[in-house]
Image (cartoon, rainbow, N blue to C red; front, top):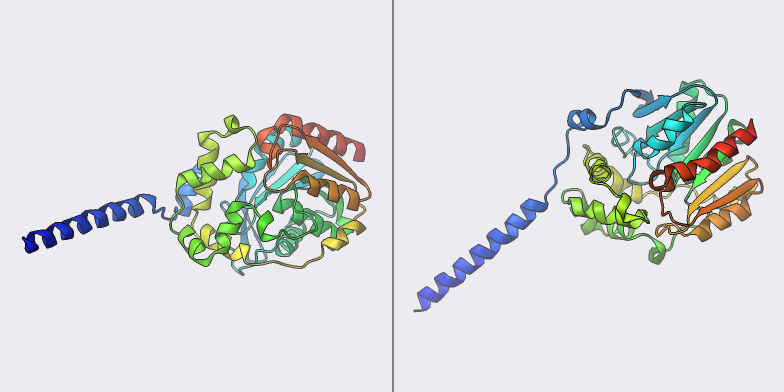
Amino acid sequence: MLMRRLQRKHWIFLVLFVILGSGIAALYTPEMNISDIEQKYLTPESEYIEVQNEKLHVRIRGNGTPIMLIHGSFSSLHTWQDWENQLSKSYRTISMDLPGHGLTGPSVANKYTMDDYADLLFALADTLKLDSFYVAGNSMGGGVCWKMAIQQPSRIRGMILIDAVGAKRFSRDEKPFIFKMLENKAMAKLFTRFTPRFFFRMNMEQVFYDENKITQELTMRYYHLMRREGNREATIKRLSQTGKDNGAEISGINCPTLILWGKQDRWIPVSTGEELHAMIKNSELVVFENAGHVPMEEIPELSLQPVLQFLKNQN
């Protein structure tokens, strides 16, 4: 009788172990080979440009006055697709995957701060022989924009900040869930091996206001590009680097600036846009009632209208 009970317990433990192992195996998400990723996400205008020993995936479209388009955290140059379709008719758009993102992949030098990105983009501008240009950036990319305007103001013709990182560092309570989660070393380690698709759907629901605009194709793009070889490890390193605390210098920026914000932004509140507007003397603030953190993706036509007017006014 005792032997039968022990055998029964062993079988129960074995079944539970198999179930648990199957669950873990189902959630395991291996890295995707760069060649497979390129087949899906290279575009006809895609090219790799070597800058500061980094092999940047860059997309250049159109002719005319150059505009750099700088994406945010967990994103890629594809976030600008709809804007590029229109802007490239009159301007030269230059979008890129920052190191640790998209097809560019991890930084050779492990440099991931906004200051590092600003330095890199000025080097890209030198490579492309751009004396001066406009910059537009979303979220972290917006922070890169104002860093660039502080570093080399004579080269920045104007800025377009979209739901941008502001002068103040977020407290832990203010940070979006994904950032707080990845600050935990154990969770960060798991993230590099277990990144289920539903996690990206949840993340998209945070940055979009209208969930009906979150398509399967959109979710899969974010999901696949994060799984590009080395990107998840790079993300953990990026989030542990802080860069210079020079937000107070924003008030010294003089270039014409357009600030766009989704009123329903759950990541960076519209109050940050109001603070940037108050700090930057030559600035205009436009708030979209029914948009979240990425209006250039969620409401591309509506969000582009003030941009076109802003650029027209500068010429």
